[in-house]
Image (cartoon, helix red, strand yellow):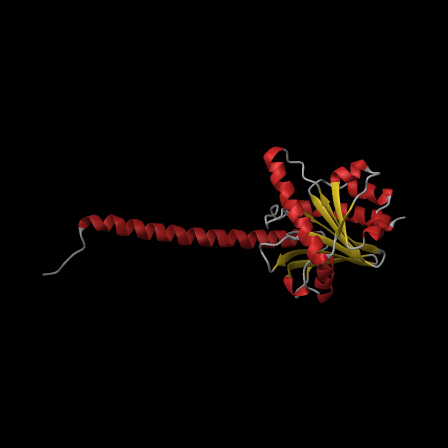
Length: 248
């Protein structure tokens, strides 16, 4: 005798097939949206003068490794790298990916860098202080202290105080490989240039390179990837900061 599927299983089978079809359609739509966004983003970056650099220049990876002395070169991976020339140098836009996800990096999505021989800076990182209050503020402060310890232990960076400039001291924590050199370099004029930045941006400098990036929370979380308008705004900020750092 021929057996047939129970009648009550038919709606379940039809529902399962419809659900599977919906998942496939959603996946195709999401893939198309991602391609459109990637294309639109790249076109917008072209409008800002950026062109993709593939593979990433070896000298850029060397510069990024030098900006993060607590890491070895093998731990630095760059992706989504773009570049554009400027007078006497180069501007880069890139993402810096770390091999150790449980560690701390202050160079993350949407990092902008200017490399130019006009800049001669000691190695330093200027971190914006958090404004969170209460238990959250204490938690984040403790996480930052861990970040400072990592940078100090692995990279030899030391916190540089500026007791005669309370406004700057309230806004930034400065870590440097040679505190005396960083203190001498960060004159009142250069500290003023740093104070013009928004409060969630990190500055790192080493010899001929200075970077501007979104504030990466210790523990690996980071602000969302900046859109092209944000990149354009940060590029203007970085160019002004660069001029402030090279002008004396």
